[in-house]
Amino acid sequence: MSVIAIIPAAGIGQRMGAEVPKQYLTLLGKSILEQSVLALLADTRVQQVFIAVQPDDPYFSAQTNLSNHPQVVRVPGGASRAQSVLHGLAAAQALHGPDTLALVHDAARPGLSKKLLTALLDQAQQVPERGVVAAVPAWDTLKQTNKHGQVQTLDRSLVWHAFTPQIFPLQALLDAMMKAERAGVNVTDEASAMEFMGVSPILLEAEQQLRKITCPDDLIMVEALLKAQPQ
Ligand code: CTP
Ligand code: MG
Image (tube, rainbow, N blue to C red):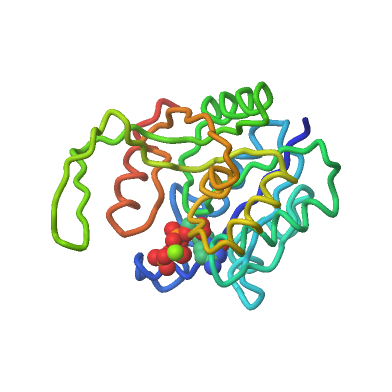
């Protein structure tokens, strides 16, 4: 199956609290968004990247070199991450055949290694019907509370942090996200929509450097991890 990518990059970065949306902050000499996009294009199986950007966003053209990239298509971002991904999927569906895999990757995760991307794509091409999600096993003891204030400890050997990339067949993902949204499911990642349809995705262990840049601390951590990589 051929592969296209969707990058939701239409958030405002409220928790980061920077002067520009966090995807436009500089990390190791390039914007975070460019790092994330170029990491995906390192695998030649990724044919095209659909980037969801707010229609009135001035930074995409002014602060990145992505506008004229031959493999990049800009699509309008939505009011939520799920809406931004849906816009990307709809644009991709209009240009690509039914036998296409959609890889969704947050703009705010610049630390995708070529090794992990290759492993994720290999896995997705072997079992496209299940799809694949980059994830990290829980590293802390996790507690669950309820509305009565009761606390329970989860079996952390069963709990994972879901990262991106997440890869599923394009048409199946588009259908699942529309159905899940209509049913009121809180679609915080692509896998949650596929799970709603009864699919059990494969979790492939990711590296810590792929954690999402949400707050200033994450930026410090991811930059340090990437700097520590052997060149
Ligand atoms: N995103 C998007 N469209 C939205 C909201 C978020 O494309 N309406 C994107 C973000 O740009 C980011 C990814 O989804 O790449 C993950 O979202 P998050 O980390 O929550 O980013 P922000 O929404 O920008 O941050 P915050 O929630 O702190 O405002
Ligand atoms: Mg957000």
